[in-house]
Image (cartoon, rainbow, N blue to C red):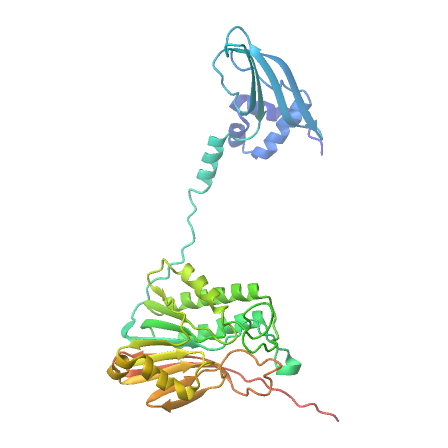
Length: 413
């Protein structure tokens, strides 16, 4: 829509009164871009002289480029009136370029300058950006220290066989499953688990391997080369896994004064587990309340007072062999502790057995069975937390169960 001459003249008068487009915009309340557009249209309409000579100079030539009725660039050629005076950039302009004609001694005989109006000079731009961020502060990821924690208690959160990226369909497995379902299920179930777990002084997040369903984009198990059903590419699976674990750790910080995180490799994520370790260790490296263990061994041992804790995915040791491995690897701790537990996954079943006085326990998964395992794994789905007292051993546990998949037989009337 064409603007009336009165509107264009008003813009010209505002700029003349206040000196610059920016100042006129602030005084009138008209947006700078709107006022600038009106001034350009006023120039094109010939309502006022487009440029003013620099003090001590005369304009010898002026040219401009007009597109769609707007002046998009200007060029002025000036020459000294009598002598080279002090150069002052006209208000609202900035110097786009300078050309000079010099004699053999280097004296300036003539000078040409190109200026443009309506854009901020670097200093003004810096001040504008600075003022825009004066009230802004970066988001804080600091979680307040929980109140009423018991320093003698350790709560362990075993996570077995998340298999992020596994794809299952209802007509094969009884229920659909993919990365989005896995993420939502894990977040909802873990939130309920945290609510039921005590405010121990220390929390131990124990990721027992097979966090991701695949190790690369070939969709094969790393060692046996079994074909896998996958819902997403590895990049998306890894990014989702890191985000889930970050949220899990932040939730743990609301319950415990400090949180220890251990990530173990499994037979499905033999190498991909490293991405989870690197992602969370970098994210929490400046958080004094989070300790991310950097060990890469297949087995991991941790001592909490009178309890010795072992952990392994389960792909290299059978449950009956875990107690012996603990005794061999941790001879001194074995002799100095009264209680010993060894936690693992891999089998997807809830299995508890006592071997050489060690409680060896396998944990369930939250994932659905894929086509290959459908009908083989009839176990339930759950998340567990175990609380250990520094002198009295296991003090209690919490368990969140998920309802079982209910398949129906085909019925023909």
